[in-house]
Length: 81
Image (cartoon, rainbow, N blue to C red; front, side, top):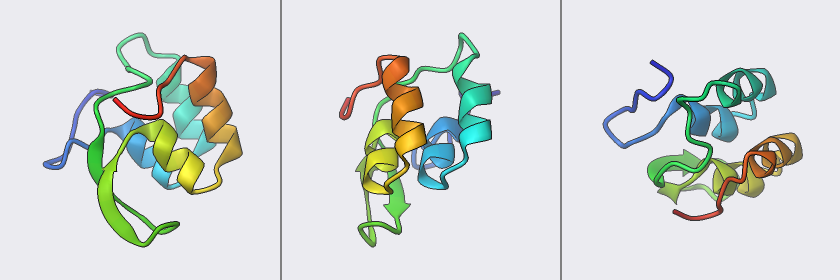
């Protein structure tokens, strides 16, 4: 289930944004069930060396993942939810 979440609310899309996985993001973003701007989930960021609530767009931007940011903005993702 592409909408599944872990115990912190992290979805596959957020994981793909944090880990800079463009192929996975593209595959997820074509699925109608995947929300491009889900509620923020608690996730660690190597870019900021902290665990904090992040949306996929925020995670991609913080990590310098320009391709991910562009994909999410094309689906009208929001920085915060």
